[in-house]
Length: 413
Length: 208
Image 1 (cartoon, rainbow over the protein chains, first blue to last red):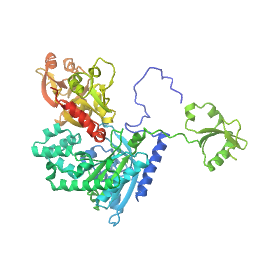
Image 2 (image 1 turned 90 degrees about the vertical axis):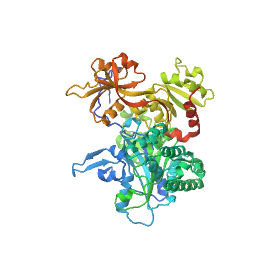
Image 3 (image 1 turned 90 degrees about the horizontal axis):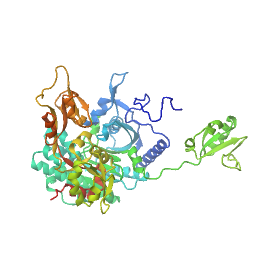
Image 4 (image 1 turned 45 degrees about the horizontal axis):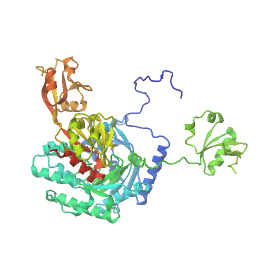
Protein backbone atom coordinates (compact mmCIF):
# COMPACT_ATOMS: atom_id res chain seq x y z
CA UNK A 1 0.00 0.00 0.00
CA UNK A 2 2.91 2.32 -0.70
CA UNK A 3 1.98 5.76 -1.96
CA UNK A 4 2.10 6.32 -5.66
CA UNK A 5 5.25 7.98 -6.95
CA UNK A 6 3.16 10.76 -8.56
CA UNK A 7 2.08 11.77 -5.07
CA UNK A 8 4.16 14.86 -4.28
CA UNK A 9 3.80 16.69 -0.97
CA UNK A 10 1.85 19.91 -1.42
CA UNK A 11 0.52 19.10 -4.88
CA UNK A 12 -3.06 18.09 -5.51
CA UNK A 13 -4.78 17.09 -8.71
CA UNK A 14 -8.57 17.03 -8.63
CA UNK A 15 -9.78 13.78 -10.11
CA UNK A 16 -12.64 11.43 -9.44
CA UNK A 17 -11.14 8.44 -7.74
CA UNK A 18 -12.41 5.36 -9.57
CA UNK A 19 -12.97 3.55 -6.28
CA UNK A 20 -14.77 6.43 -4.54
CA UNK A 21 -18.21 5.51 -3.21
CA UNK A 22 -21.32 7.23 -4.53
CA UNK A 23 -22.01 10.44 -2.60
CA UNK A 24 -23.69 9.78 0.73
CA UNK A 25 -22.63 6.14 1.00
CA UNK A 26 -19.96 5.11 3.45
CA UNK A 27 -18.03 2.06 4.59
CA UNK A 28 -18.45 1.12 8.22
CA UNK A 29 -15.04 0.14 9.55
CA UNK A 30 -13.79 -1.48 12.77
CA UNK A 31 -14.33 -0.82 15.58
CA UNK A 32 -17.39 1.30 14.74
CA UNK A 33 -19.02 -1.36 12.60
CA UNK A 34 -18.89 -3.81 15.50
CA UNK A 35 -20.16 -1.14 17.86
CA UNK A 36 -23.06 -0.40 15.51
CA UNK A 37 -23.87 -4.09 15.24
CA UNK A 38 -23.94 -4.61 18.97
CA UNK A 39 -26.07 -1.50 19.48
CA UNK A 40 -28.51 -2.77 16.87
CA UNK A 41 -28.62 -6.10 18.69
CA UNK A 42 -29.35 -4.38 22.01
CA UNK A 43 -32.19 -2.44 20.39
CA UNK A 44 -33.69 -5.56 18.82
CA UNK A 45 -33.41 -7.44 22.13
CA UNK A 46 -35.42 -4.71 23.84
CA UNK A 47 -38.01 -4.78 21.05
CA UNK A 48 -38.19 -8.59 21.34
CA UNK A 49 -38.83 -8.32 25.08
CA UNK A 50 -42.10 -6.55 24.24
CA UNK A 51 -43.14 -9.34 21.89
CA UNK A 52 -41.87 -8.03 18.56
CA UNK A 53 -40.68 -10.55 15.94
CA UNK A 54 -38.01 -9.93 13.35
CA UNK A 55 -38.80 -9.57 9.65
CA UNK A 56 -36.23 -8.93 6.94
CA UNK A 57 -37.74 -7.24 3.89
CA UNK A 58 -35.75 -7.10 0.63
CA UNK A 59 -33.45 -4.16 -0.17
CA UNK A 60 -35.55 -3.13 -3.15
CA UNK A 61 -38.93 -3.91 -4.58
CA UNK A 62 -41.29 -2.69 -7.28
CA UNK A 63 -41.54 1.05 -7.26
CA UNK A 64 -45.32 1.05 -7.64
CA UNK A 65 -45.57 -1.09 -4.51
CA UNK A 66 -43.26 1.00 -2.30
CA UNK A 67 -44.75 4.24 -3.62
CA UNK A 68 -48.22 3.39 -2.26
CA UNK A 69 -46.88 4.40 1.13
CA UNK A 70 -45.03 7.56 0.12
CA UNK A 71 -45.98 11.19 -0.25
CA UNK A 72 -45.43 12.77 -3.67
CA UNK A 73 -42.50 14.58 -2.16
CA UNK A 74 -40.90 11.39 -0.80
CA UNK A 75 -41.47 9.64 -4.14
CA UNK A 76 -39.35 12.23 -5.92
CA UNK A 77 -36.30 11.29 -3.90
CA UNK A 78 -36.49 7.54 -4.37
CA UNK A 79 -33.54 5.85 -6.11
CA UNK A 80 -35.04 3.66 -8.82
CA UNK A 81 -33.77 1.54 -11.67
CA UNK A 82 -35.10 -0.93 -14.20
CA UNK A 83 -34.67 -4.54 -13.17
CA UNK A 84 -33.20 -6.18 -16.26
CA UNK A 85 -34.97 -9.53 -15.88
CA UNK A 86 -38.52 -8.20 -15.60
CA UNK A 87 -38.35 -4.70 -17.05
CA UNK A 88 -40.09 -3.46 -13.88
CA UNK A 89 -39.06 -0.19 -12.32
CA UNK A 90 -37.80 -1.04 -8.84
CA UNK A 91 -36.97 1.30 -5.98
CA UNK A 92 -34.37 1.10 -3.24
CA UNK A 93 -36.44 1.50 -0.10
CA UNK A 94 -36.44 5.02 1.36
CA UNK A 95 -38.49 3.78 4.30
CA UNK A 96 -39.20 0.31 5.68
CA UNK A 97 -42.72 0.96 6.99
CA UNK A 98 -44.43 0.55 3.59
CA UNK A 99 -42.64 -2.78 3.22
CA UNK A 100 -43.78 -3.96 6.65
CA UNK A 101 -47.30 -2.79 5.81
CA UNK A 102 -47.19 -4.87 2.64
CA UNK A 103 -45.90 -7.90 4.56
CA UNK A 104 -48.59 -7.53 7.22
CA UNK A 105 -51.36 -7.06 4.66
CA UNK A 106 -50.32 -9.96 2.46
CA UNK A 107 -49.02 -12.56 4.96
CA UNK A 108 -51.03 -11.79 8.09
CA UNK A 109 -54.45 -10.49 7.06
CA UNK A 110 -57.21 -10.94 9.68
CA UNK A 111 -55.76 -11.60 13.12
CA UNK A 112 -57.29 -10.99 16.52
CA UNK A 113 -54.10 -10.50 18.47
CA UNK A 114 -52.12 -7.46 17.30
CA UNK A 115 -49.18 -8.28 15.05
CA UNK A 116 -45.82 -7.05 16.36
CA UNK A 117 -43.00 -6.90 13.84
CA UNK A 118 -39.51 -5.43 14.16
CA UNK A 119 -36.81 -4.80 11.60
CA UNK A 120 -33.29 -3.53 11.19
CA UNK A 121 -31.62 -2.44 7.98
CA UNK A 122 -30.66 0.51 5.88
CA UNK A 123 -32.76 2.82 3.79
CA UNK A 124 -31.68 5.30 1.12
CA UNK A 125 -33.04 8.77 1.40
CA UNK A 126 -32.41 12.36 0.37
CA UNK A 127 -33.13 14.35 3.51
CA UNK A 128 -34.11 17.95 3.00
CA UNK A 129 -31.30 20.35 3.80
CA UNK A 130 -27.84 18.99 4.57
CA UNK A 131 -27.16 19.94 0.94
CA UNK A 132 -29.74 17.40 -0.28
CA UNK A 133 -27.32 14.55 -0.49
CA UNK A 134 -28.47 11.00 -0.66
CA UNK A 135 -27.90 9.31 2.66
CA UNK A 136 -27.84 5.68 3.64
CA UNK A 137 -29.60 5.53 6.98
CA UNK A 138 -29.29 2.55 9.32
CA UNK A 139 -32.58 2.01 11.08
CA UNK A 140 -34.17 -0.29 13.60
CA UNK A 141 -37.88 -0.13 14.17
CA UNK A 142 -41.12 -1.69 15.30
CA UNK A 143 -44.58 -1.81 13.80
CA UNK A 144 -47.65 -2.64 15.89
CA UNK A 145 -50.45 -3.68 13.57
CA UNK A 146 -54.12 -4.30 14.26
CA UNK A 147 -54.64 -2.20 17.37
CA UNK A 148 -56.34 1.17 17.12
CA UNK A 149 -56.23 2.03 20.82
CA UNK A 150 -53.97 4.76 22.19
CA UNK A 151 -52.49 1.90 24.24
CA UNK A 152 -50.72 0.90 21.02
CA UNK A 153 -49.39 4.45 20.46
CA UNK A 154 -48.09 4.55 24.01
CA UNK A 155 -46.54 1.08 23.72
CA UNK A 156 -44.55 2.02 20.63
CA UNK A 157 -43.16 5.13 22.35
CA UNK A 158 -42.28 3.19 25.48
CA UNK A 159 -40.59 0.41 23.49
CA UNK A 160 -38.48 2.96 21.65
CA UNK A 161 -37.52 4.77 24.86
CA UNK A 162 -36.69 1.46 26.54
CA UNK A 163 -34.41 0.49 23.65
CA UNK A 164 -32.62 3.85 23.76
CA UNK A 165 -32.33 3.57 27.52
CA UNK A 166 -30.68 0.15 27.13
CA UNK A 167 -28.07 1.88 24.97
CA UNK A 168 -27.38 4.40 27.71
CA UNK A 169 -29.55 7.21 26.37
CA UNK A 170 -31.66 7.85 29.47
CA UNK A 171 -32.70 11.42 28.79
CA UNK A 172 -34.36 11.15 25.41
CA UNK A 173 -37.47 13.33 25.03
CA UNK A 174 -40.57 12.27 23.17
CA UNK A 175 -42.44 15.05 21.40
CA UNK A 176 -46.05 14.42 20.47
CA UNK A 177 -47.91 15.77 17.49
CA UNK A 178 -50.95 14.68 15.50
CA UNK A 179 -51.25 14.09 11.76
CA UNK A 180 -54.99 14.88 11.74
CA UNK A 181 -54.20 18.36 13.07
CA UNK A 182 -51.41 18.78 10.51
CA UNK A 183 -53.79 17.81 7.70
CA UNK A 184 -56.37 20.32 8.97
CA UNK A 185 -53.77 23.09 9.06
CA UNK A 186 -52.50 22.38 5.55
CA UNK A 187 -56.09 22.31 4.25
CA UNK A 188 -56.47 25.95 5.34
CA UNK A 189 -54.52 27.02 2.25
CA UNK A 190 -55.97 26.89 -1.23
CA UNK A 191 -55.01 23.61 -2.94
CA UNK A 192 -52.37 25.21 -5.16
CA UNK A 193 -50.69 26.84 -2.16
CA UNK A 194 -50.57 23.75 0.07
CA UNK A 195 -47.03 22.72 -0.80
CA UNK A 196 -45.85 26.24 0.02
CA UNK A 197 -47.73 26.07 3.31
CA UNK A 198 -46.20 22.69 4.24
CA UNK A 199 -42.71 24.19 3.82
CA UNK A 200 -43.57 27.33 5.77
CA UNK A 201 -45.31 25.34 8.52
CA UNK A 202 -42.38 22.99 8.76
CA UNK A 203 -40.18 26.05 9.43
CA UNK A 204 -42.88 27.61 11.71
CA UNK A 205 -42.26 30.65 9.50
CA UNK A 206 -45.26 32.75 10.54
CA UNK A 207 -44.16 35.72 8.43
CA UNK A 208 -44.29 33.61 5.27
CA UNK A 209 -47.47 31.81 6.37
CA UNK A 210 -49.24 35.18 6.62
CA UNK A 211 -48.43 35.74 2.93
CA UNK A 212 -49.68 32.28 1.91
CA UNK A 213 -52.91 32.17 3.92
CA UNK A 214 -55.20 35.15 3.35
CA UNK A 215 -58.13 34.49 5.70
CA UNK A 216 -57.40 36.02 9.14
CA UNK A 217 -59.26 33.25 10.93
CA UNK A 218 -57.26 30.53 9.18
CA UNK A 219 -54.07 32.38 10.06
CA UNK A 220 -55.15 32.57 13.70
CA UNK A 221 -55.70 28.80 13.73
CA UNK A 222 -52.25 28.11 12.30
CA UNK A 223 -50.62 30.54 14.69
CA UNK A 224 -52.23 29.01 17.74
CA UNK A 225 -51.17 25.54 16.58
CA UNK A 226 -47.57 26.72 16.14
CA UNK A 227 -47.62 28.31 19.58
CA UNK A 228 -49.05 25.15 21.15
CA UNK A 229 -45.56 23.77 21.69
CA UNK A 230 -43.59 22.92 24.80
CA UNK A 231 -44.17 20.69 27.80
CA UNK A 232 -47.00 18.16 27.41
CA UNK A 233 -48.64 19.78 30.44
CA UNK A 234 -49.96 22.28 27.88
CA UNK A 235 -52.52 19.59 27.04
CA UNK A 236 -54.00 19.87 30.53
CA UNK A 237 -54.73 23.57 30.03
CA UNK A 238 -57.49 25.21 28.00
CA UNK A 239 -57.62 24.62 24.24
CA UNK A 240 -57.08 27.90 22.35
CA UNK A 241 -60.36 29.06 20.83
CA UNK A 242 -58.92 29.13 17.32
CA UNK A 243 -58.15 25.40 17.59
CA UNK A 244 -61.33 24.27 19.32
CA UNK A 245 -63.67 24.85 16.37
CA UNK A 246 -63.00 21.71 14.35
CA UNK A 247 -64.25 18.42 15.76
CA UNK A 248 -61.28 16.53 14.25
CA UNK A 249 -58.85 18.81 16.06
CA UNK A 250 -60.71 18.43 19.37
CA UNK A 251 -60.69 14.64 18.98
CA UNK A 252 -56.98 14.69 18.15
CA UNK A 253 -56.21 16.81 21.21
CA UNK A 254 -58.23 14.38 23.32
CA UNK A 255 -56.07 11.48 22.05
CA UNK A 256 -52.87 13.40 22.73
CA UNK A 257 -54.07 14.15 26.26
CA UNK A 258 -54.67 10.45 26.90
CA UNK A 259 -51.25 9.54 25.49
CA UNK A 260 -49.52 12.20 27.60
CA UNK A 261 -51.33 10.98 30.71
CA UNK A 262 -50.27 7.37 30.03
CA UNK A 263 -46.66 8.46 29.53
CA UNK A 264 -46.84 10.43 32.78
CA UNK A 265 -48.15 7.33 34.52
CA UNK A 266 -45.10 5.46 33.18
CA UNK A 267 -42.90 8.04 34.91
CA UNK A 268 -42.11 9.91 31.69
CA UNK A 269 -43.88 13.21 32.42
CA UNK A 270 -40.63 15.24 32.42
CA UNK A 271 -39.63 13.76 29.11
CA UNK A 272 -42.85 14.40 27.20
CA UNK A 273 -43.29 17.42 24.93
CA UNK A 274 -45.93 18.46 22.44
CA UNK A 275 -45.87 20.51 19.24
CA UNK A 276 -49.09 20.87 17.26
CA UNK A 277 -47.34 22.71 14.42
CA UNK A 278 -45.42 19.60 13.38
CA UNK A 279 -46.26 18.56 9.81
CA UNK A 280 -43.70 15.80 9.45
CA UNK A 281 -44.66 12.59 7.70
CA UNK A 282 -47.82 13.72 5.91
CA UNK A 283 -47.25 10.81 3.54
CA UNK A 284 -48.98 8.10 5.54
CA UNK A 285 -49.43 9.25 9.12
CA UNK A 286 -53.05 9.61 10.20
CA UNK A 287 -52.99 10.03 13.99
CA UNK A 288 -50.77 10.46 17.01
CA UNK A 289 -47.16 10.83 15.87
CA UNK A 290 -43.91 11.66 17.63
CA UNK A 291 -40.21 12.34 17.37
CA UNK A 292 -37.45 11.28 19.75
CA UNK A 293 -35.00 14.02 20.67
CA UNK A 294 -31.54 13.76 22.21
CA UNK A 295 -29.38 16.61 23.36
CA UNK A 296 -26.45 17.45 21.10
CA UNK A 297 -27.92 15.87 17.98
CA UNK A 298 -29.36 18.35 15.49
CA UNK A 299 -32.04 16.00 14.17
CA UNK A 300 -34.56 13.67 15.82
CA UNK A 301 -32.91 10.31 16.56
CA UNK A 302 -36.18 8.52 15.99
CA UNK A 303 -39.69 9.12 14.75
CA UNK A 304 -42.96 7.31 14.50
CA UNK A 305 -46.70 7.51 14.42
CA UNK A 306 -50.05 6.02 13.54
CA UNK A 307 -50.83 5.10 9.95
CA UNK A 308 -54.31 3.59 9.88
CA UNK A 309 -54.83 3.82 6.13
CA UNK A 310 -51.57 2.42 4.78
CA UNK A 311 -52.40 -1.32 5.01
CA UNK A 312 -55.52 -0.81 2.90
CA UNK A 313 -53.18 0.28 0.09
CA UNK A 314 -51.84 -3.27 0.17
CA UNK A 315 -55.27 -4.90 0.13
CA UNK A 316 -56.11 -5.53 3.77
CA UNK A 317 -57.14 -2.61 5.96
CA UNK A 318 -55.88 -2.52 9.55
CA UNK A 319 -54.95 0.18 12.04
CA UNK A 320 -51.24 0.39 12.76
CA UNK A 321 -48.56 2.42 14.47
CA UNK A 322 -44.79 2.18 14.57
CA UNK A 323 -41.46 3.83 15.14
CA UNK A 324 -37.97 3.82 13.63
CA UNK A 325 -34.72 4.70 15.36
CA UNK A 326 -31.86 6.18 13.30
CA UNK A 327 -28.84 4.19 14.46
CA UNK A 328 -26.34 6.62 12.97
CA UNK A 329 -27.81 9.50 14.98
CA UNK A 330 -27.81 7.23 18.04
CA UNK A 331 -24.06 6.86 17.49
CA UNK A 332 -23.86 10.65 17.35
CA UNK A 333 -25.84 10.95 20.60
CA UNK A 334 -23.57 8.40 22.26
CA UNK A 335 -20.37 9.93 20.92
CA UNK A 336 -19.98 11.91 24.14
CA UNK A 337 -19.93 8.65 26.11
CA UNK A 338 -16.33 7.34 26.33
CA UNK A 339 -15.54 4.62 23.79
CA UNK A 340 -15.09 1.00 24.68
CA UNK A 341 -11.58 -0.22 25.39
CA UNK A 342 -10.02 -3.00 23.36
CA UNK A 343 -10.93 -6.49 24.53
CA UNK A 344 -7.87 -7.92 26.37
CA UNK A 345 -8.75 -11.41 25.18
CA UNK A 346 -8.56 -10.32 21.53
CA UNK A 347 -5.00 -11.36 20.64
CA UNK A 348 -2.62 -11.60 17.74
CA UNK A 349 -0.83 -14.95 17.75
CA UNK A 350 2.59 -15.25 16.11
CA UNK A 351 4.70 -18.35 15.61
CA UNK A 352 5.68 -21.11 13.22
CA UNK A 353 2.56 -22.05 11.28
CA UNK A 354 2.33 -25.71 12.35
CA UNK A 355 2.42 -24.85 16.07
CA UNK A 356 0.36 -21.75 15.57
CA UNK A 357 -2.68 -23.46 14.08
CA UNK A 358 -2.95 -25.90 16.98
CA UNK A 359 -2.28 -23.25 19.62
CA UNK A 360 -4.82 -20.86 18.06
CA UNK A 361 -7.46 -23.56 18.05
CA UNK A 362 -6.89 -24.40 21.72
CA UNK A 363 -6.95 -20.70 22.71
CA UNK A 364 -10.21 -20.17 20.82
CA UNK A 365 -11.73 -23.15 22.62
CA UNK A 366 -10.87 -21.39 25.87
CA UNK A 367 -12.69 -18.23 24.83
CA UNK A 368 -9.83 -16.16 23.40
CA UNK A 369 -10.33 -14.20 20.19
CA UNK A 370 -7.32 -15.18 18.11
CA UNK A 371 -6.00 -13.68 14.89
CA UNK A 372 -2.87 -15.26 13.39
CA UNK A 373 0.18 -13.68 11.73
CA UNK A 374 3.68 -14.63 10.66
CA UNK A 375 6.63 -13.41 12.70
CA UNK A 376 7.98 -11.24 9.85
CA UNK A 377 4.55 -9.61 9.44
CA UNK A 378 4.66 -8.66 13.11
CA UNK A 379 8.22 -7.37 12.74
CA UNK A 380 7.23 -4.84 10.07
CA UNK A 381 3.82 -3.88 11.56
CA UNK A 382 3.05 -0.23 12.36
CA UNK A 383 1.96 0.50 15.96
CA UNK A 384 -1.58 1.43 14.83
CA UNK A 385 -2.01 -1.99 13.27
CA UNK A 386 -1.68 -3.52 16.73
CA UNK A 387 -4.07 -1.07 18.35
CA UNK A 388 -7.08 -3.35 17.92
CA UNK A 389 -5.41 -6.25 19.76
CA UNK A 390 -5.43 -6.56 23.52
CA UNK A 391 -2.01 -8.23 23.42
CA UNK A 392 0.38 -10.10 21.18
CA UNK A 393 1.01 -13.79 21.93
CA UNK A 394 3.83 -15.94 20.72
CA UNK A 395 3.76 -19.72 20.43
CA UNK A 396 6.53 -22.18 20.26
CA UNK A 397 6.87 -25.92 20.89
CA UNK A 398 3.46 -26.36 22.56
CA UNK A 399 3.47 -23.23 24.65
CA UNK A 400 1.83 -19.88 24.02
CA UNK A 401 2.87 -16.83 26.02
CA UNK A 402 2.49 -13.10 26.15
CA UNK A 403 5.25 -11.47 24.08
CA UNK A 404 5.89 -9.00 26.93
CA UNK A 405 6.00 -11.70 29.60
CA UNK A 406 9.64 -12.53 30.56
CA UNK A 407 8.39 -15.60 32.48
CA UNK A 408 6.90 -17.04 29.28
CA UNK A 409 3.85 -18.22 31.26
CA UNK A 410 2.14 -20.88 29.17
CA UNK A 411 -1.42 -19.73 28.42
CA UNK A 412 -2.35 -23.11 26.98
CA UNK A 413 -2.13 -24.87 30.33
CA UNK B 1 -25.38 28.19 27.08
CA UNK B 2 -27.02 29.09 23.79
CA UNK B 3 -24.83 29.38 20.71
CA UNK B 4 -25.89 32.02 18.20
CA UNK B 5 -24.60 32.13 14.62
CA UNK B 6 -24.45 35.73 13.42
CA UNK B 7 -23.24 36.91 10.03
CA UNK B 8 -20.33 39.33 9.91
CA UNK B 9 -20.76 42.53 7.94
CA UNK B 10 -23.82 44.66 7.25
CA UNK B 11 -26.30 42.59 9.24
CA UNK B 12 -24.07 42.58 12.32
CA UNK B 13 -24.04 46.38 12.29
CA UNK B 14 -27.84 46.45 12.14
CA UNK B 15 -28.16 43.80 14.84
CA UNK B 16 -25.62 45.32 17.21
CA UNK B 17 -28.15 47.34 19.31
CA UNK B 18 -30.35 44.27 19.74
CA UNK B 19 -27.38 42.09 20.68
CA UNK B 20 -26.36 44.71 23.24
CA UNK B 21 -29.84 44.41 24.74
CA UNK B 22 -29.24 40.71 25.45
CA UNK B 23 -25.96 41.37 27.22
CA UNK B 24 -23.26 41.44 24.57
CA UNK B 25 -20.71 44.18 25.22
CA UNK B 26 -19.46 46.60 22.56
CA UNK B 27 -16.24 44.67 22.84
CA UNK B 28 -17.91 41.42 21.90
CA UNK B 29 -19.53 43.09 18.91
CA UNK B 30 -16.42 44.80 17.59
CA UNK B 31 -15.80 43.47 14.11
CA UNK B 32 -12.15 44.41 14.12
CA UNK B 33 -11.68 41.99 16.98
CA UNK B 34 -10.31 38.77 15.47
CA UNK B 35 -12.00 36.41 17.95
CA UNK B 36 -14.71 34.49 16.13
CA UNK B 37 -16.32 33.23 19.32
CA UNK B 38 -17.54 35.67 22.02
CA UNK B 39 -19.73 35.33 25.13
CA UNK B 40 -22.22 37.74 26.67
CA UNK B 41 -21.91 39.12 30.20
CA UNK B 42 -23.77 36.42 32.13
CA UNK B 43 -22.41 33.72 29.78
CA UNK B 44 -25.96 32.63 28.90
CA UNK B 45 -25.15 32.96 25.21
CA UNK B 46 -22.18 33.06 22.90
CA UNK B 47 -21.77 34.40 19.40
CA UNK B 48 -20.18 32.74 16.41
CA UNK B 49 -19.32 35.40 13.85
CA UNK B 50 -19.56 33.67 10.49
CA UNK B 51 -19.73 34.29 6.79
CA UNK B 52 -23.45 34.75 6.03
CA UNK B 53 -23.49 31.69 3.77
CA UNK B 54 -22.38 29.46 6.64
CA UNK B 55 -25.07 30.41 9.16
CA UNK B 56 -27.70 27.88 7.91
CA UNK B 57 -25.11 25.10 7.93
CA UNK B 58 -24.14 25.66 11.56
CA UNK B 59 -27.75 25.91 12.69
CA UNK B 60 -29.02 22.96 10.68
CA UNK B 61 -26.37 20.64 12.10
CA UNK B 62 -26.91 21.95 15.62
CA UNK B 63 -23.38 23.37 15.97
CA UNK B 64 -25.23 26.61 16.68
CA UNK B 65 -28.65 26.56 18.37
CA UNK B 66 -29.95 29.59 16.54
CA UNK B 67 -28.87 32.47 14.35
CA UNK B 68 -29.73 35.31 12.07
CA UNK B 69 -29.54 35.10 8.30
CA UNK B 70 -31.01 36.63 5.15
CA UNK B 71 -33.85 34.79 3.43
CA UNK B 72 -31.75 34.69 0.26
CA UNK B 73 -29.08 32.57 1.92
CA UNK B 74 -31.66 30.43 3.73
CA UNK B 75 -33.50 29.68 0.48
CA UNK B 76 -30.32 29.00 -1.44
CA UNK B 77 -29.23 26.48 1.19
CA UNK B 78 -32.70 24.96 1.48
CA UNK B 79 -31.86 24.46 5.15
CA UNK B 80 -34.21 22.46 7.33
CA UNK B 81 -34.49 24.87 10.28
CA UNK B 82 -37.16 26.82 12.15
CA UNK B 83 -37.72 30.44 11.14
CA UNK B 84 -39.37 32.03 14.19
CA UNK B 85 -39.13 35.72 13.26
CA UNK B 86 -38.84 37.97 10.28
CA UNK B 87 -36.67 40.78 11.66
CA UNK B 88 -37.72 43.26 9.02
CA UNK B 89 -34.15 44.50 8.67
CA UNK B 90 -31.86 44.11 5.70
CA UNK B 91 -34.85 44.37 3.38
CA UNK B 92 -34.10 43.93 -0.31
CA UNK B 93 -35.07 41.57 -3.12
CA UNK B 94 -33.52 39.04 -5.39
CA UNK B 95 -34.03 40.10 -8.97
CA UNK B 96 -33.11 39.26 -12.53
CA UNK B 97 -31.16 42.15 -14.11
CA UNK B 98 -29.80 42.69 -17.60
CA UNK B 99 -27.93 45.48 -19.43
CA UNK B 100 -30.21 48.49 -20.00
CA UNK B 101 -32.20 48.08 -23.19
CA UNK B 102 -31.39 44.40 -23.59
CA UNK B 103 -34.19 42.82 -21.64
CA UNK B 104 -34.74 40.44 -24.51
CA UNK B 105 -31.06 39.71 -24.79
CA UNK B 106 -31.62 36.09 -25.68
CA UNK B 107 -29.60 35.38 -28.76
CA UNK B 108 -31.11 33.25 -31.51
CA UNK B 109 -30.59 29.55 -30.99
CA UNK B 110 -28.83 29.91 -27.64
CA UNK B 111 -30.17 29.39 -24.19
CA UNK B 112 -30.07 32.26 -21.73
CA UNK B 113 -26.91 32.40 -19.61
CA UNK B 114 -27.51 33.63 -16.06
CA UNK B 115 -24.64 34.56 -13.75
CA UNK B 116 -25.38 34.36 -10.04
CA UNK B 117 -24.22 33.66 -6.51
CA UNK B 118 -27.54 31.83 -6.05
CA UNK B 119 -27.58 28.81 -8.39
CA UNK B 120 -30.32 26.90 -6.54
CA UNK B 121 -32.72 29.85 -6.43
CA UNK B 122 -31.93 30.80 -10.03
CA UNK B 123 -32.52 27.29 -11.30
CA UNK B 124 -35.80 27.06 -9.38
CA UNK B 125 -36.97 30.49 -10.58
CA UNK B 126 -36.48 29.78 -14.26
CA UNK B 127 -37.71 26.19 -13.94
CA UNK B 128 -40.96 27.50 -12.44
CA UNK B 129 -41.37 29.67 -15.55
CA UNK B 130 -40.57 26.72 -17.78
CA UNK B 131 -37.47 28.39 -19.16
CA UNK B 132 -34.28 26.53 -19.79
CA UNK B 133 -31.23 28.54 -18.77
CA UNK B 134 -27.53 27.98 -18.23
CA UNK B 135 -26.64 28.99 -14.69
CA UNK B 136 -23.09 30.27 -14.21
CA UNK B 137 -21.99 30.27 -10.58
CA UNK B 138 -19.94 33.28 -9.43
CA UNK B 139 -18.72 34.13 -5.94
CA UNK B 140 -19.31 37.91 -6.16
CA UNK B 141 -19.19 41.04 -8.36
CA UNK B 142 -21.82 39.34 -10.45
CA UNK B 143 -22.72 42.63 -12.21
CA UNK B 144 -19.60 42.40 -14.34
CA UNK B 145 -20.60 39.16 -16.04
CA UNK B 146 -23.04 40.63 -18.62
CA UNK B 147 -20.69 43.55 -19.32
CA UNK B 148 -17.93 41.27 -20.54
CA UNK B 149 -20.16 38.72 -22.24
CA UNK B 150 -19.87 35.94 -19.69
CA UNK B 151 -23.64 35.95 -19.21
CA UNK B 152 -26.77 37.54 -20.67
CA UNK B 153 -28.24 38.54 -17.34
CA UNK B 154 -27.77 38.07 -13.60
CA UNK B 155 -29.77 37.08 -10.54
CA UNK B 156 -28.60 39.03 -7.52
CA UNK B 157 -29.64 40.98 -4.45
CA UNK B 158 -30.95 44.45 -5.23
CA UNK B 159 -31.26 46.95 -2.41
CA UNK B 160 -31.35 50.47 -3.85
CA UNK B 161 -30.45 49.55 -7.41
CA UNK B 162 -27.44 51.87 -7.32
CA UNK B 163 -24.86 49.17 -8.11
CA UNK B 164 -26.98 48.03 -11.05
CA UNK B 165 -27.29 51.60 -12.37
CA UNK B 166 -23.60 52.26 -12.11
CA UNK B 167 -22.93 49.13 -14.13
CA UNK B 168 -25.54 49.85 -16.77
CA UNK B 169 -27.95 47.16 -15.62
CA UNK B 170 -31.69 47.29 -14.90
CA UNK B 171 -34.11 45.02 -13.07
CA UNK B 172 -36.20 42.84 -15.35
CA UNK B 173 -38.20 40.96 -12.73
CA UNK B 174 -38.27 40.21 -9.02
CA UNK B 175 -37.44 36.67 -7.94
CA UNK B 176 -38.35 37.00 -4.26
CA UNK B 177 -38.35 39.41 -1.33
CA UNK B 178 -35.49 39.19 1.13
CA UNK B 179 -35.15 40.25 4.76
CA UNK B 180 -33.22 39.03 7.76
CA UNK B 181 -34.86 36.26 9.80
CA UNK B 182 -34.03 34.40 12.97
CA UNK B 183 -33.40 30.68 12.50
CA UNK B 184 -33.26 27.90 15.08
CA UNK B 185 -32.13 24.32 15.05
CA UNK B 186 -35.18 22.04 15.10
CA UNK B 187 -34.01 19.98 18.08
CA UNK B 188 -32.50 22.86 20.09
CA UNK B 189 -35.79 24.72 19.77
CA UNK B 190 -37.72 21.78 21.16
CA UNK B 191 -35.29 20.97 23.98
CA UNK B 192 -34.48 24.55 25.08
CA UNK B 193 -37.67 26.26 24.03
CA UNK B 194 -37.99 28.77 26.89
CA UNK B 195 -34.42 30.08 26.76
CA UNK B 196 -34.22 30.16 22.96
CA UNK B 197 -37.60 31.82 22.53
CA UNK B 198 -36.72 34.52 25.06
CA UNK B 199 -33.42 35.24 23.33
CA UNK B 200 -34.84 35.29 19.80
CA UNK B 201 -37.84 37.37 20.88
CA UNK B 202 -35.42 39.91 22.35
CA UNK B 203 -33.50 40.01 19.07
CA UNK B 204 -36.71 40.59 17.13
CA UNK B 205 -37.73 43.64 19.14
CA UNK B 206 -37.07 46.81 17.22
CA UNK B 207 -34.67 49.07 19.12
CA UNK B 208 -35.87 52.57 20.04
